[in-house]
Length: 263
Figure 1 (cartoon, rainbow, N blue to C red):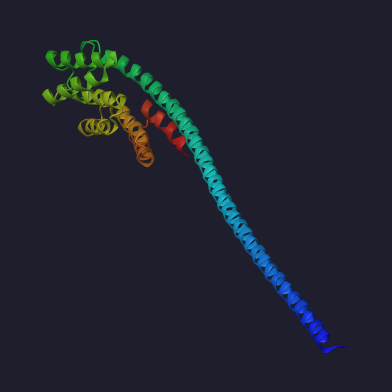
Figure 2 (spheres, helix red, strand yellow):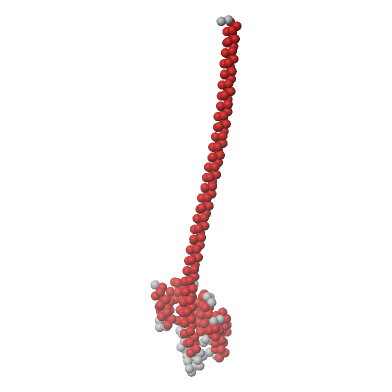
């Protein structure tokens, strides 16, 4: 083979080999870029997915918090309804008890008013208002003032009756009717729920005239006031003293019944 021809063949072969290498190099660059693009898209997809997971987690937490708030509100509502029902029951029981006390008071007052009418009779027809040994009758003016206050009490205007009896006691502290005025003043205060003031006046009666006909009822009324004031121990002590001091009185019998219920 001639040398010029051989040189041409070698040169052509070298050119072809160079073109093949360039083509292979160009293909590798595109493949790497494609891989980088895929990686970037994958990373972006993963990041997006992670964000969705985080948002979903936060949403679930928010829903859980909301559910807990709803349950808490339900519990508070149930508790409120329970307290309302309990209050209604207690109110009903209080009304029943108050009704029983008022009925008992009404019955006792009727008996006392009947005896008051007997005491108000002229001396030759009945006894004096006070206990044995007290003067037979008060002065006419005192008696008229006392009867006026008692009439107001009987009408049911207990506030005005308090004023009437208080004024009578202030003007006539030594009257034979003063213990009875203290008794009715205490009852008028009891009727208007002035229990502490009623106790004070009932005790004033007991201190001034312990043998007065109204004394047992006054002591029973003190126990009633103490019961209304939730002083159960004090009421029990007062009833025990009533039974011991005035054992034959109707008030003492009522006191025994009360003590039996307390046990």
